[in-house]
Image 1 (cartoon, rainbow, N blue to C red):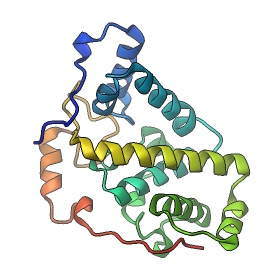
Image 2: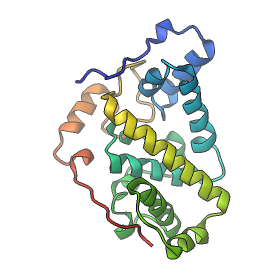
Image 3: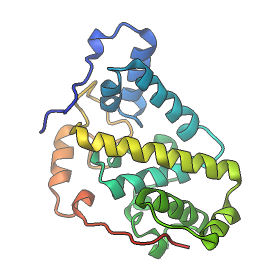
Length: 218
């Protein structure tokens, strides 16, 4: 396994009780898992900026959390951030998302797993992620299903998570390296380090598939 390109801050060296409590929450609940936050911990402002945004925009907010979760993993599959793509939202699972709901994300328009509202949100995530041109028909589709506050929140969240995932992808960080011992928010097959290694060796592992998108869905 590769060494991370930027070191993890050892929790044993952190003296801020609030930061330690947040890292422990990451260990117990995930999304985010502690490794990414242990990198951000080099700059407390970055650590808290992400933690607060994740809580208020992803886990809370005005838009449906399950839709934001599908958009998050759509981004992961698109930019091939394996660290992010192998996590699942516990809140999303409690709301009814199952693993099969993640399998068709890249080909969401052709899938019968998603309703029209979910497909509209995913088309929004697709356009932002791939820098695709949009038109009046595209926006009319979004406005049919979402209010302007919801469109702001989903768009902002997709932009934030896309940037973070593109960055994390370059760092070679991996799960079960900091505050290990829990499977909180891990996707099936990634619950511990040994299972993670085996899953990544599977020829059907999602990150081994090629992806190409040319235009925004309408």
